[in-house]
Length: 123
Image (cartoon, rainbow, N blue to C red; front, side, top):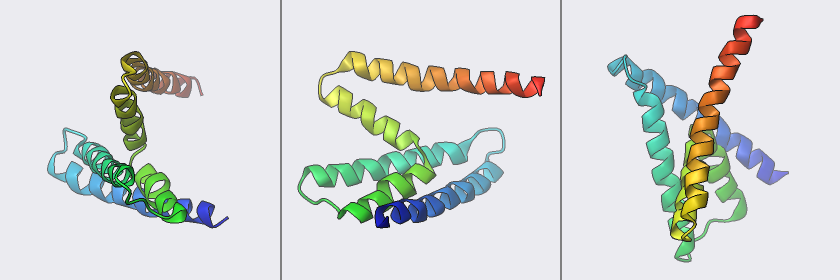
């Protein structure tokens, strides 16, 4: 239960950070989604740092990791998890899996947005 609460608290702050970055940066660059880009880049950097430290023996306690990785970074951007999974495939020499992961996550997500927009027109 504590891990579930940790994820929720992290998600609250991650989503709030994404909202704040989007409002701030999109105000400066109104014709480009700079807030989304910044959220994705920050989350990618952070998940890379956390997992990199874990790989070198400096892991975090389970609830802290859940709060940061799943909650905070998940709320900030699920792109960070996708990026880590893709990089892990590449590091492990699974180039085809990495390519399929990118194609499916990007392509199918774009298609899902198009489908959602089309369904919304019917409602």
